[in-house]
Image (cartoon, rainbow, N blue to C red; front, side, top):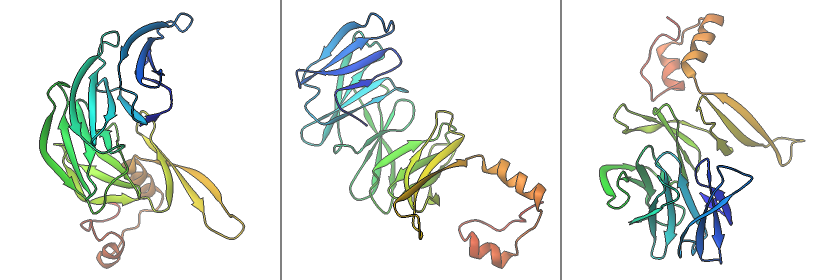
Amino acid sequence: METGSLWFAGPHTVVTVEDGWHLRLWDVSDPRRPRKGAVIEDAALSESALYDDVSELLITEEPGHTIRLYDLSQPARPKKGATLPAAPGSYFPAGKDRLASAVTDGAIEFWDVSDPGKPAKEHETVRLDRAIKSLDLIPDGRHAITSAPYRIWSLGRDGGWVTPEFATLEGADSVRLPADGSWLAVTVEIDAAGWTNEKRTYILDYDTDRLYEAMCRAQPVSLSQDRWGALFPHLDHRPSCD
């Protein structure tokens, strides 16, 4: 989600707020000679907007809990699309030509935005126990991360969400995901004597299979079925190291 008066919309386009009302596109493919591009009128009335670089869509907020789609596949000629129902700040990219919107009751609805002029609501609706404030898809297409709290969800081959969550990152203040999605940067606040208001950032390797194999090579010990059930009640028992 972008706020402020300037942000990037792709590698060669910058968007600025003009006269407090409009959005101006600039071609910065040559940073020494930025060129003034098209203007999207009355698109800066709200406090935030979003650019989805995967789907090449600019998304702005409008009155009445609606958002407007703009096709920026040709930044020099932005095309005004349709509107969707979504509260301010409750819409998130969910893959190529796909948008998610969060509802206050914890539901997540998905929209096919391959045609910005005619977005179509998908049949799938994910129902969680609370409303989310953020949603990020890991590039491997196998997991999603929501907040708050920060939780990791497994995704099926068809993109369907698997419940309950795969893991909860307890105490995480923020989670950052790099472009390649191979690891997580998790910031937590240290709550211990002598560490008042201290925050630390941990790098978590997301390749759990590789870590699992490394642990088995170092210490090949298996858990009993009872102990496994106590530690991992949501997973079927199996020998820890074959």
